[in-house]
Length: 322
Image: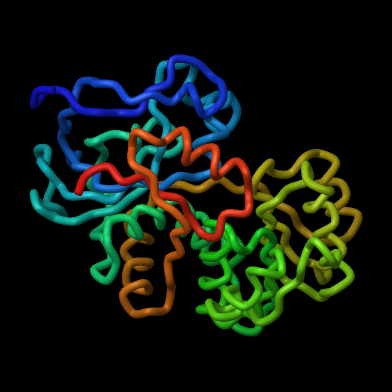
């Protein structure tokens, strides 16, 4: 290995976790307005393994070879011309380039400086790397898309997962009444982090347990027991369904119109400014970060297999540098 190369997880074709392999690749250099970040940890998200398998953002990245991953936490190694907001040595975290390739499963990444923010001071790189994609998704849904206000009623499906546990906390922070769906084993934890009510989806259909909801954040989708379509039943007139995994199909749009409610698709965007706000909430103890398990970079395939098995509490993270 030389100063011009780095370790990265590369896949040469679509397939299962076994296609992920560590190899030596050229180390990137920052362009003007960009920073070079030495990655200490990289978050693992469902979009990563979907893309690896040929769905997710595969249509954006094109044919392999490529490196998946978007969540990073690390230290600025070098700044390009014109960067004034960060300097070498700064601890940062971010979700650069999404949905284009960020190459997060690597020892170094480059991206525009303003797609990063300073890492929360009260958490380590592992926990910081678990934040960006999931927390930005939750933030941009709750704050920017649904514009949740105090006193509103919010339902979060799959609330114990990465996006879900942040959505619960952001909605609660804004003063909403939050109902969360998850297996019974997660209920006490979800209430600790902000859920007012919980529904065990394995025993009770949520539409039989709640009603008069202002905003449904559906993180499951119609592919699983028509969860998005069923969500329409619990919304008040004029309420909003944000359908995250697969968006809003023509059939779902028609059903929403017939029910007198709204439905929208959603895809997260890089947002360094929001990450600065989220870091402040983490440092203030208003938002907690849950990491279920870590894996070394060389075991990225095992991390994907673990995530695809389902039922992860919070996030999975790859450790890259000490």
